[in-house]
Structure formats: C-alpha cells, structure tokens
Image 1 (cartoon, rainbow, N blue to C red):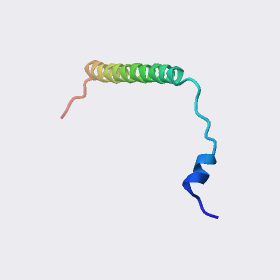
Image 2 (image 1 turned 120 degrees about the vertical axis):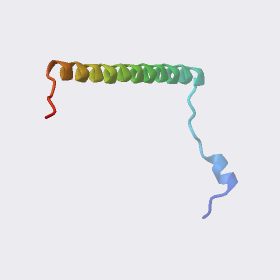
Image 3 (image 1 turned 120 degrees about the horizontal axis):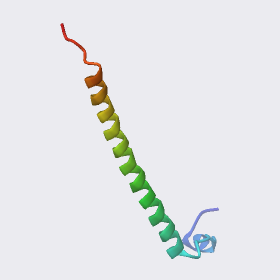
Length: 63
C-alpha cells in the first residue's frame, strides 16, 4: 500500500467551524501576554529601585 493524492483526499480532517471566534480568542490571549510582559517590566524596575534604596539605607564602606 502507498499513500496517493486520491487517498489523502479521502481523509477527513475536522476544521474549526468558527474561525473568527478563534481569532478573537487568540487576540485576547495576545493582549494578555502583552499585559503580563509590561507588568513583568514594572516588577523588574521596582526590584531595581528596591535594590538602590537598600544600598542607600545600608551603605557598604569600601576600605
């Protein structure tokens, strides 16, 4: 047995019925990814600020 184009045409492949709905969901998830990225950047900035403030509170004397 071998796979031919005619045999491939006989294979049923289910496709999603509502492509527009999937695109809306994908857009929503992409938006959430962007928000998560922005919040992650904010968190990094706050961590750096905390580090700087802690260094000012507890200065290390270099001898």
